Length: 407
Picture: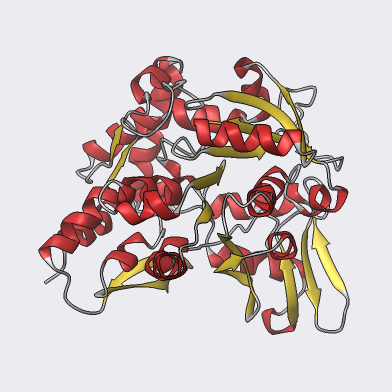
């Protein structure tokens, strides 16, 4: 019998691919489905208790941030104890990272200071350079090897039981770095699993514009004139800011395209549905969230011209603020505060996404799809900041895509 959580996310089309369900139940495993997204597959029995536990934390069903250890929400950008821009002081980390290398610098400092013993994060799969694996980083070199955005499916929570068992066995603690939905699911699961609170003192997220399909990555290779078996390494960006999508071949040669072409023209066109209705793409459940602190061009749009990397950083909890201040004191990062009002110029797409969430959820209701519950995320206040005409266009556009079968 199909568990209720799986039936709901399948009917709604709201799976994020985080992998939490596979960690909770041995009867679920993560698999890849066309056009290349991570999805749960039932391979054995799922008990009623497991079903309920998954439903309570699955971000395709609920994101509840009402009782997280945070300050009150800012409607568009979430809770904040510090908001600023900055970068890693290590020039290599800054260059390798997707923007200013702040996440890499912060988790490296957490390792060196003894706050944590290892980091759970995503990096390129050595066996499939265009894909991802979840890995353990136990040194600065490990963290640097995992630096850079990975615009394709990942399920970092699928191995949660392994990481917790390791930490329980040797008394260690670890930090988790993931997408906003991954962190929200982990934070929710912590309410029922005390091991998480004891063994995962630090959770970091990055602003997420959505998960593209593997098929979209294939389109990049096609435009580069590269066959997948010939690729030895693949970076979606980094090696500068924003960096280029680069395929390095087994013969040592490389081919690349600009971030504007790879993300703007290809990857962003094939983002999974759940990401289009995300109410927390800015990592509101994390201790610290980072993003690209884009400079606006003369039209008010982010400029993707190559320059020195700059990260937006939001410390959301006391733990996050303490880490940021310690890393700053140690000289690992440089930051300066910025007004919250300035963030819209850096991340206009994220502001628009949050303002239109309510109208898109109403489109789902109209066509009879189950709707995720977003609690403690100030979605109503965010919606009031969007002009009615734009909300109506967002609503009507999604209804049309439902009718056409393209959403």
